Length: 141
Image (cartoon, rainbow, N blue to C red; front, side, top):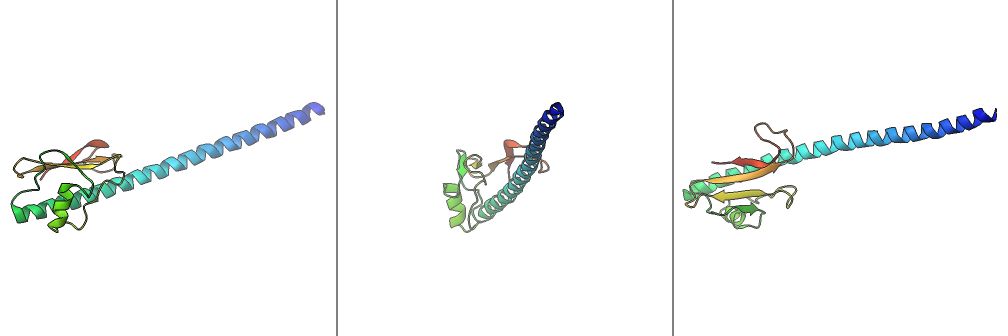
């Protein structure tokens, strides 16, 4: 009888450990699903913000026959020269910065004469059609 009592207590302990391990695995799975949702949401926000910046650049172009001149790559922070120019010209109310700035940043660089530009941005996922995860994404006029 004593042997079966010890075995029963040992099994109860192992069962508790197994249940705890399963709960931890479940929590990790749910947490990773929420993380992916957050990344996708930030990527969707980035695309909307890049679209707004591009529209502001086009509005600026329509009034000046050139884009803001910034021959060196400039981080778009809302406080940079390009942002201030677009805001002062009322092309956009407020130039957005990346949701995870400074870990990620939008960048702008124009051609010397303002005839063109490249607007770069990062994405965290592959969820946006025609773009890839990473910081190799860009738009041109």
